[in-house]
Length: 285
Image (tube, rainbow, N blue to C red; front, side, top):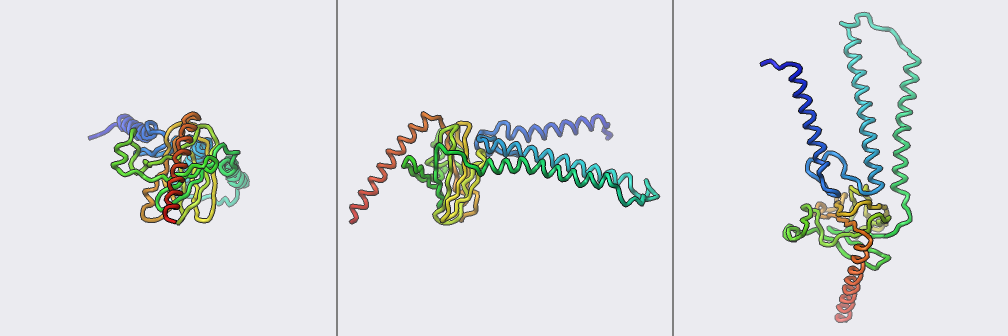
């Protein structure tokens, strides 16, 4: 069976379009703040830092692709043009000043083009603006304890079982739902401080572009400014023992009014918990 070049070309084009649609579709319809099946790109950005990371990722992808195609073209030209059959009398040229200057200057310019946005991104990540809110995340085997030092709030966040998850509305992604979510207001600078009570953990939320180690005896810090409301999921990103895969992180971003209502509720719960601890301690004396 013969296939015409035109038909083969149309089939190839159709296959390429289908592959691209599948790749793009995996992210185009992905929910904000959580992983999606067949996702091939970064999660949708929900903070200024992540927006810059996504831009830099795209910039580097195009740059690397162009360099790869250029090198491939050079290899093809050399193989086709400079072989014994096509060129029986080999050239004895040993120097070419123009080419030597070009292959020195062009790589330098490429490195500068990479370094400038790279350093800008690093400074953006590390230079923490004046925070509107500070939250301390303490890694434990295998859960997270969140402390709001300015508001006297503290609670532990533990992964939901499948039975608990099924009762939630909406139902959170499997292995990512928690009983107590970290709550922050939208469009506010949040300073996240991390430490650990036992081994090294890592607090990470991909949509915010944040990944910071939680080390026993040390207090590390990073920041994010959530630009969209919703739930954003992450996981402990440092191998920390048997249940490392069951340490999800959930940040719920709400408006200012919802945050104030949540804060008052948590403060009441924290006071009641402290009173019960004090009563239990006095009863044992």
